[in-house]
Length: 353
Image (cartoon, rainbow, N blue to C red; front, side):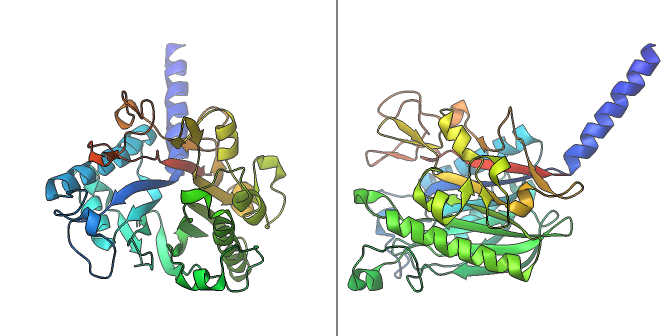
């Protein structure tokens, strides 16, 4: 009897291990101002220089890199695997991404980089890290933030529209287990001053229209949209312009996306806090083809409990005292460097067969 029980357990473990091989982690992390220490005359990066207002020294930069790598490593340790795709925002350039992936804690992942210099006046961009043994990159594109042809009611004057600059949207197209995937990484316009709702809707509209074109070019393609939306899953940019559904059963056609983070937000989870209120601006969406894939195809899976998404937070990533107690342990507090990680927690989904 003991022998039969042992064989059963062994086979069960082998089956579980085999199933795990087909799981892939796809996530997003706002790195909160990952700037190098060099002056770029084309960018507004003066505050992140050794003589700048943040006194941004090489030691602080190296501490920041080590902190970001520690979080990525911690997610690996929890999942038992590296991210297949990890979108990032608030990075200054490709150099900081190269410095990040070479950190000892994550160098073994052999992450490759997709990045384009964008038009943001502060010089912050979005980027993508990917595992080349899991994701075969076919092509990529930097999609400009344009007011042309929008159906969104824009409040900016024509003069303000001409002056406006923000991050481009990154699209990477590739293969996972032979299946076509498109991943979009974005950092939609800020909420500072109470403005920008129409601009965030415009950004969502641009992504959505491009994703629909990709579905026409590659029938059955699986699409992930991720980023710091500066909006919650319940806001108009996500619900109306990204066609995001909060219930997986409501995803009924290729015009729909599934948002796993609406339920998490309703249940009290958050990726960042503002004035004592939790929000989830760091959103990962899955299209119909990824949500309702037939048996044998890659599809979104539950991450923990009954949730299809995960807000990753650990005690070392959390402030335990002071003004920002119980919120993400940030790099700066009231202008002073405090050696934290980011003012956002990362988020991710898991796909598999």
